[in-house]
Figure 1: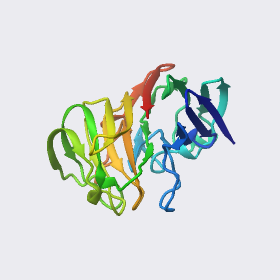
Figure 2: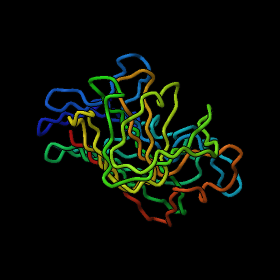
Figure 3: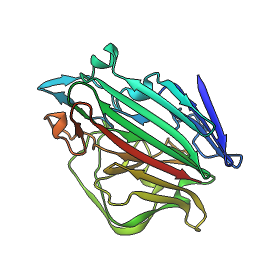
Figure 4: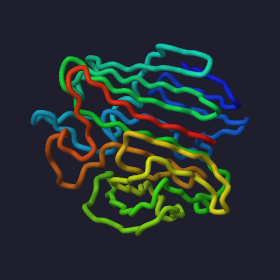
Length: 279
């Protein structure tokens, strides 16, 4: 089932499956990727409790969590709906405990405020301590070829890309893109499933715009550590993905709780992430 809210010229449609936004219309124009070329059916999936291909070992036991976790393929419950907001919830179940041993509550709230879309994710531990990661994967629709666009970071960044292999695991190599605040998106780097992975970014917002200066979106993300860029093959679109954890590294082992970016909560504690998209 899908639910819709409309306010201030922005119309949001969210699917109960994954609590995923499947359409964001602003002033009558679609702002999310709609699979125009058949390359990828996603729009803006939620990654939880792990991002990417990352081995999950908890208490010495390896758990078979799928890449990007299970939230994106889980049925959420709509708990509240108002004129300008939708609130969804997912809780631990027998099914989730078979791949992830923790009780948890994941609440996702979408709110239209002054023509912008605000997204809040709140993760709450149950009656045991909790370790988890979370990431966002919005895919912004573009009017022309990807090579015509750039990202403007909130502050100057030293962008070091961490290459991955065909399984999505970090190779241990690095590629230095240098210091910059304006990053021309290298379309040639985003083919055949390749992802640009920038660890430990300091900015908490970026502006996606044409190199001519025409802005597509301002995207703010708080609570995340890393930023990744990916696109469906050949698409006029770009996924700007804030993640907590990095993908696993080739040959790496170790407890999930010790991996960079993984968050630990005590009994009953909560952690909140915030995003805002302004078109």
